[in-house]
Length: 301
Image 1 (cartoon, rainbow, N blue to C red):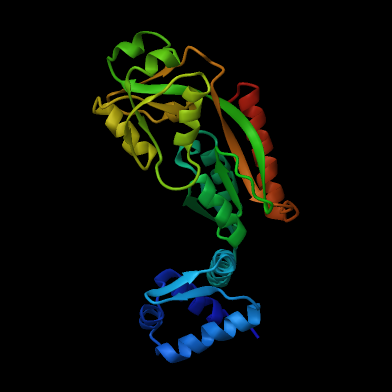
Image 2: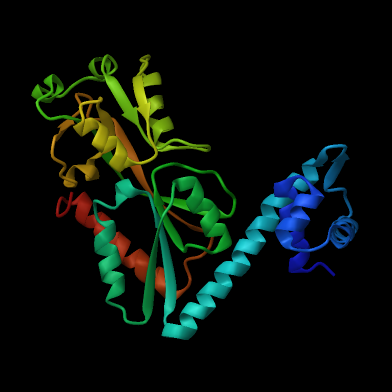
């Protein structure tokens, strides 16, 4: 019968690509580890590794198995941590993932509303949209708020609203005297965020220019919004941000509307598919509906 130790051993070997190093990492001898991996392959019924003189490589089946083995181990850890949290505080744990640019609008209002429920323990995780999808599948978060469409059969995404893009520019810059066009902006150094593997907001921004036959002049790529704004304040260039970000007042920065007001970015809520039945999620959905309606009718922008 497959046990969690089989998965832990497999992940360690897959990550190290070497039985000796994996055994050292796991603090066990190599021969027992070799037997456990062989036993796992027999249980799965397919080879998970290709044995080579300098180490091990995952087969296609092994690569697939690794993704799901990690998810299972993460799910177990999240379950343990959640159980401990509930036992200590006797509260229902509800975890929210978010990208920073959505936290300058109505999301804090929702969090404050939820925290008034004394039976809830609210935990926040700053995660990129792709990271939110994985966190939903492992149970690390219960809902995520991001800006990118991610196609995954286990997750459903709801469009809450769209908001215009603004240009964050250095104070006193010539771009601040009017609403600039994308063509004008393409002639100035641009700072994009975030970077790294997978889909990002920076990819969306690049697409905004590309779809209009333009090429942006990217001078810097940084990991987060705050760093991007710091570089803008240092007169290193400009960056494009969602409208909500203008609530973040920074010395040395002005926010200006674009000439093309039809350029918008989405705000999406991501949930596990079919996970709308429990009482907490129903409460979250009710609050979200109210906040979105407030924005639509102009009571909140």
